[in-house]
Length: 334
Image (tube, rainbow, N blue to C red):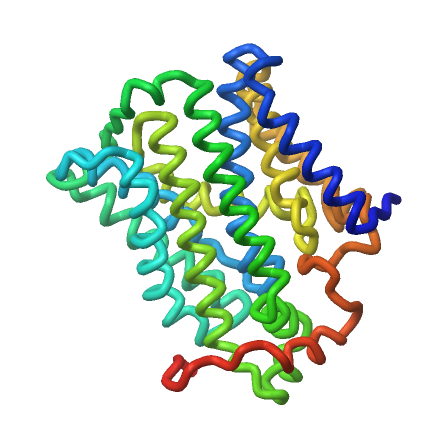
């Protein structure tokens, strides 16, 4: 089991970023293409884990935000002629608005009811996108035409690396803030958090909205990179991917979801390329992870750093920290 202090972690993160910065110089273009997919999947999983790992809410509807982010880029270009760079900026605004609207209703329930409601909303959006041929292209999807410089895989790699790094830094600041401490308190013991004055529904709604907005950025990058937005991006199996990635890496670790995303993206590539039974292989992998690594890969390696929030105290002590968290404004849903 590994235990790293703050200085060691900072050095490790710096080394990782340096390796990623020079990655196009040391790998072939085919491997670089796969690495871009890994970066996008990592952002998808880490955005999702704001809801699952930090807040304790199991969502089966994040495919909606992923797909809407992709369609934002495609439809803005198709109908308004806007460049994809603008679409990537607008995508989190669109998906954040949808997440806010969906979350307003779903955070009023908990547990499996919350999971089923998010799935229902996601499938409603999928049906709307798949059936609106005149606007979205229906089953044919919506094409995306990147500018000339982004046809180069190396250039797109650096764009994706910059966007994903910025989003991860934001998530790091978020979970280490008083807001993140309040979410951790809600996750550990919602009744005690409510007792000390934390507005649970407000914080859950805020976390769901932020998670949806960041997921939209991942979807926008996906459409821009693969030059197409398909309805399948909003279908329910897509919602299972971040759940599996997060569980594989470690729910209550910061970079665990990114490690899980890398594992599943690379595994999916090789399984689809070299076997005729991809679902069987994935089933075996999930079974092994559940039986032998119940805390995920990173959660098992760093056993004393299981908490998702960096430096979080053990047991129920998060509640003491959450007392200093910012109070929700008046009029928040309750």
